[in-house]
Amino acid sequence: MIEKLPTESKGFNPFGELIGLNFTTFEQGYSQCILEVNEKLLNPHKVLHGGVIYSMADTGMGGALYSYLGEGELCATIEIKIVYFAAVTSGMLTCDTKVIHRGKKIATMESEIENDGHLVAKALGTFSIFKVEGD
Image (cartoon, rainbow, N blue to C red; front, side, top):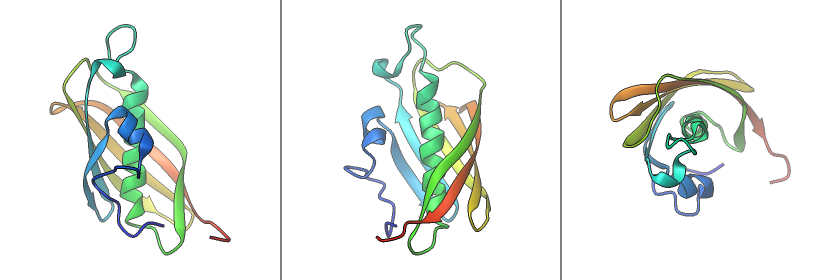
């Protein structure tokens, strides 16, 4: 496990860097990440690809859960359910995530994704918590 999640993600989260995702906040059971919409993230209909919003929720959930992980513990996504409320074509996305419940082996998180202050999606995710043997 890493000691502290870096808000400057150079080299830490290559996929996040690819889509332009950056964390702004890590607190106990909470994370916030942002992403500026650009033309490379749009689908053929000139609307933000839903996978970008899903990736924000997934990454934000992992970030929020890290604050609850113990020595040698890691986490991985089991499932995420997402509901999209509005199409996004431009602007700044903000993903606020909180840990709802942390058990011994399973955690549940909730993310809300806003586009310039308007709710565009909400996600509920379940993550596995485990230890890697031999590290």
